[in-house]
Image (tube, rainbow, N blue to C red; front, side, top):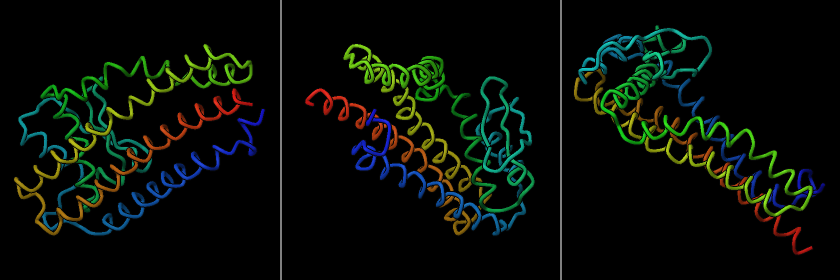
Length: 232
């Protein structure tokens, strides 16, 4: 089946460039984080302390801050109301750690203030998980059997899963905006340190843009390949 091997021209023309961009975005966020992970902040504020300060500044209470294994595995879990920070962020007093921790605290603030996009994202997670699991199977079957209905349903479900990434963009940008504004307003970081934190969070945001680009490229590849086969 040429669609799923190297003969597929759309794989190389559309998907590979998007994947290379995503790889560059990942390398950039790792490089930027590592750069500012070596730069301490003047107050000696750790990531865990920064998260607590951001929560306190927004009047958000009852959110725990815990360590989690791994690198750049930091996240906020709304189900348990816990901010989980990786070891390199939780105890570190670097500019990078403060920025990342403040960003995750920004997500907790979003939930506390019932920020619309994050509520929508949470509501559609079950649908998107189902769509992502079954869409590729239907697309493969539709292509193999040359069944336009099967293929169409698969594409629609894949688009639904991609919609999750669309909703993720404003959520992530807003969390970073809240973090930087709070760090500046409370003077937890000075202006030079804020610039470093912005670079870290900006690099992280680009990975979400790149992931969306890959999904759009994959969707376009599916449609073009199916139409090409139909013409043949």
